[in-house]
Image (spheres, rainbow, N blue to C red):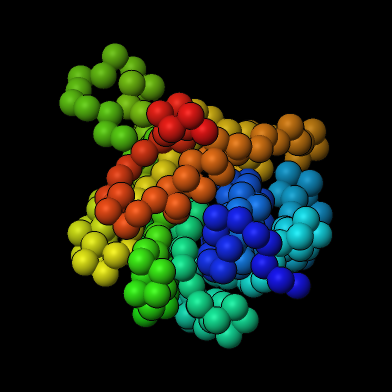
Length: 273
């Protein structure tokens, strides 16, 4: 199948955590603009729990039925070898990498007294180390793309939980925005700092590195999972339309548009998307 015509024709994008939710919607948006998309996530088989629908194969299949090009790959962001294999398989199949979207994330909502060492490990590995490992693995190919096309892009998906709550005292725990997920907010703040450090380091290579967050709540399967009873599951999932539009706009910018930490609703309003 030939690549779909569009502003991202001949570009190749890896989207991590794209079997459902925000990653899935971004993958569809990039494919709709002509990019060949690697759908990477752990979900290879349909789960019995309806709260976590979707597999990499289902998303890739939907993209191809719509006229796009996609490759489904199992990807474990905690495993450096899995990341290296994803990059190698992408280049073997599509011949290049122009865009990396680090969307995969691990969330544990326990309060501080109940966070276990394994929770610390998984969130640090998936939310911070994983994106860094993906950029490092893809870097030679991103540099080649920037040399060839004039730009390559890394987009890290963050969270409003990364915002500092400001100095205390606090009238209540809800005044501290990340109080319900203290470590998750910390890892996303680290991801945003990493985004700007990488932007500085890679600016001369014409590789733009930016971070994008949802401004409001989006009822993705991941968000609703913790709020839903398995016996009476919430399945009113929302499409992350503004995240998808904002992501597509960002990866079409010149490489000088780098080091930004932006929110989907604000960006869509500013750019009239």
